[in-house]
Image 1 (cartoon, rainbow over the protein chains, first blue to last red):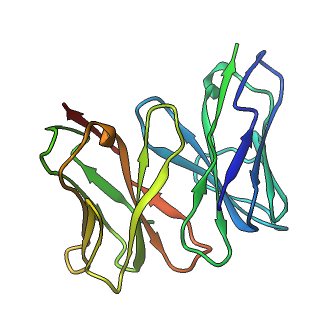
Image 2 (cartoon, one colour):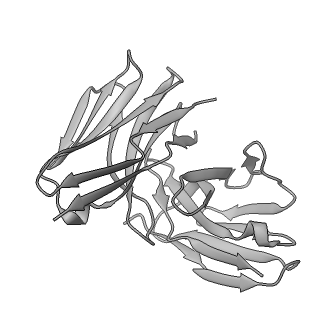
Length: 115
Length: 113
């Protein structure tokens, strides 16, 4: 149980385009989902916390207009990187927390490369 | 906000030896402390966690200890094996299940056969 999927696993796009990443909890309802960015050999940098049906809470320094987060249902959250630039290239990982647990379960991540 | 420091950043041990990774946190209200293992190219996975009302927890070769007074907690891996090689992250969370966790910077553990 407690499986989180993420799609796509890898995406290459041109500078200026927008990219949408989906995070799904497959066998549980996730009241809270988190989006992280991870640079090579570095830690998980929390970008935002999203709760179903409400606006996401962004961490300091994260542009909410650039990284649009939607948590429309208890099993799906999306991250849209708008007008992507090469510096947005990174590994993006989501995690989801069941409402009844303290543990968060991570997705497999999405490798974004902006040319 | 919460600040979590993790040491060492890299750790190399011989197979069969023990490995210890330490973390300190700043917010005394933190009440949940998970540890994650991330193998190369894979997602972080929870390996053990501890709550603030417990001082120690053990699961086979892995144990975690918590010192609330000193605000630090540690991961202990005994009888290390090459498959234990990975990046380990500690985290601390304040408050309820809806709260966010703050992660340490990670420790790259290498177990030499």
